[in-house]
Image (cartoon, rainbow, N blue to C red):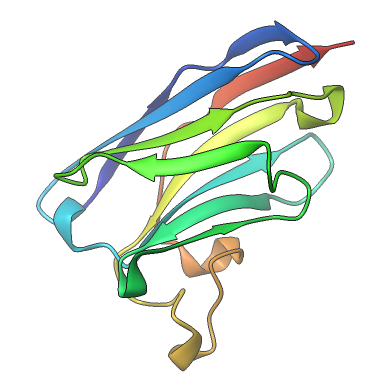
Length: 132
């Protein structure tokens, strides 16, 4: 079991920055394959924003945020961060933290960090609003 709690959302003007945090707890929190950030706006499907995966210690970003957002994790792996810089109005969304504890994000199993169905734990979300 992994319990995820996001924080750090809010309202900011275009060009500004925000840092989201995701606190992970529970007996399985130290055994995740990938942890990622997704975002969703009403009427659209959940979009993968960034992920950090233990296999190879790699980070991944969607093209829409590459160069502006940075995903990181503290050393014990209990907290996931998303530093969001140069924010744009199109970044406005509910942001969710997610964890894969089953390996479904692994390419060897046909998975991908950006597929929401590959994650089995989700936080409640934190709203980010960017005004022009």
